[in-house]
Image 1 (cartoon, rainbow, N blue to C red):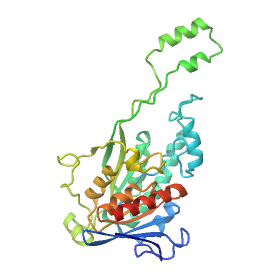
Image 2: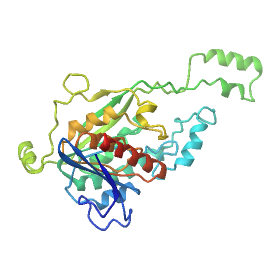
Image 3: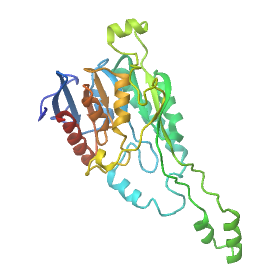
Image 4: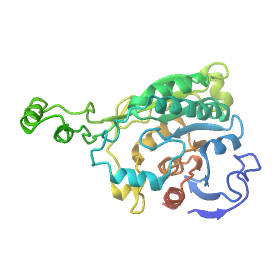
Length: 326
């Protein structure tokens, strides 16, 4: 069972937290006889990280904005919904093909600030896992490494995506410099050729580790961090860096969950089990609709998360409360 209350500052966070929210939603439950707490704030991700105590967190697992097609640090659900509804309309360039070099640079700059705070709040040996859009992964990895993390690996979520490449027939038909016969000839010539977008089948994650305090053994004895639980497996084999999990269906996400990039619960539970232990603290500063929080509390971890968007914050609270109640 669980209780849901708006209470004072949780012990994991240094007072004051007025800059975020005076009364964060705080949920309580029990996992295998152990008390579990979830603290969910309605506010900015960087501000949450700045309020956390140094060396207090075992795992940060998050899915930040990717800085493409409006998904930047100024993420706005209303604008994104409008953009998504137009995704099938061919404009100047198909959605996802608008290459602005500044997007990658802005993403790297933003993730560097996030990684700096993550470095401070994680315990020595603690892990930082962050999803990324595939073509901007290198920017995120550089940002994490520049923040002095040891980049241990690139993990990848494998799924069955939908082809997004566009035919160029529409553009050819709208050209004013060609007559009808020339248009037909060019369309025939380009038959089977589309914009350079292969069917997406993976989403990468950077696996960063805060430098250890001494040896692996000494670090574990002192901080209970820095090692991976290889008994955890998705397929019965030794855990690998390619994790194949189907995209979540409506039943898993919840009827009211309209978030665009919901991760499957099985994937997030796997990451939580691999890189943390029951009773430890997991943080997701870009909480979205709450899947990381659900995975954490359902597996006996304490959780702290933040979501800036009203609608997603409400859904996250509901889903995490439901996981504590189950």
